[in-house]
Length: 405
Image 1: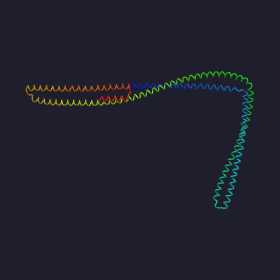
Image 2: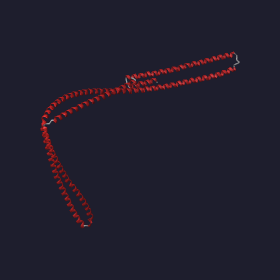
Image 3: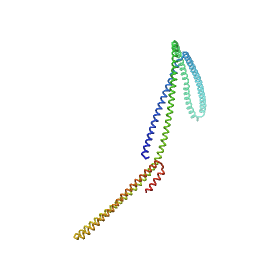
C-alpha cells in the first residue's frame, strides 16, 4: 500500500465518521421530538384530569354550601376572638413593661438624687472636689437626656394600643359587613332553591358525561401506554444502534491506531529511502565531477593537439619556404611525412573514440544502478506493506546501502 492509498483510506474513514456523527445527530433530534410528543401528551392528560376534578367540584349540593357558610362564620368568630385576646394580652404586657420601666427609671433617679446630695455635701465640705462636682453635673444632664429618651420610648406602647383599638374597630366593621353579605347570600340561596332540581338533572347528565369522559380517558391512557411502550421499544432499538455505532467507532479507532503505527513504520522507511537517495545524489555528484574531469582532460588534449597542429603548420610553412626549390624527392618525403601525420591524427581519433564510448558506457551503468535502487526501494515498500516491521526495514535499508557502497 503506497502513501496515496493510505491517504485515500484515511479520507474514507473521516467521511464515514462524519456520516456516523450526522446519523447520531439525526437520531438524537428524533428522540428529542419523541420526548416532546410524550411530554405534550402528558400535559394534555393532566389538563383532562384537572378539568374532570373542576367539573366534579362545581356540582356541590346545597347542604355543603350551608355548611361552608357556617364554617366561614365560625372561622370569622374565632379570628375575631383570637384578635381580641391578642389585643388584651398586648395591652397587659405593654402596661407591665411600662410599669417596670417606670419603676426602674424612678429607682435610677432616686439613686442619682442620693448621689448628687452626697456629692453636694462632700463638695461643700471639700473645695478640692469642685471639679468632680462639675463632672457629675454633666453626667446628671446626660442622665436627664436618657430619661427623656425613655419617656419617648414609653409613649410607643400607647401608640401601639391605639393602633390595636383601631384594628378592633375595623374588625367590628368587617364583621358587620360580613353579616350583611351573609344576609344577601341567604337571599340568593332562597332564589337559587327553585333551580336545584334543574341542577340535580344537570349533575346527573354531567355524571354520565364524566363517566363517558372517564372511559375515553381510560382508552386514551391505554393508547398512551401503547405509544409509550412503542417509544420505549424504539428507544431500546436506538440504544442498540448507538451501541453498534460506538462499537464501530472503537473499531475505527483501533484501525486508526494500526494505521498510525504503519505510518510510523512508513516514515522510518521513508527516512531510509531518503538516506539512499542522498547517497545516490552524492554518487551522481561524484560521477559528474569525474565526467567534468574527463571533459577537461579531453579539452586539454584537444588544445595540445591544436597547439601541435599549429606548430606543425608553422614548421611546415617554414619547410615549404625553405624547400620550395627542392626536387621531387623532397616532395615525396614531404608527402610521406604528411601521410604519417594523417596516420597519427587517425590514431588519435581512434583513441578518442573508445574514450567517448567508455564515458557513455559509464553513464549507462550509472542509469542501470539507479534503476536497481528504484527496484529495491519498490521491493522494500512491498515488504513493508506485507510485514510492517521497522527493525527489519532498517536492517534491509542499511544492508542495501552497504551493498551499494
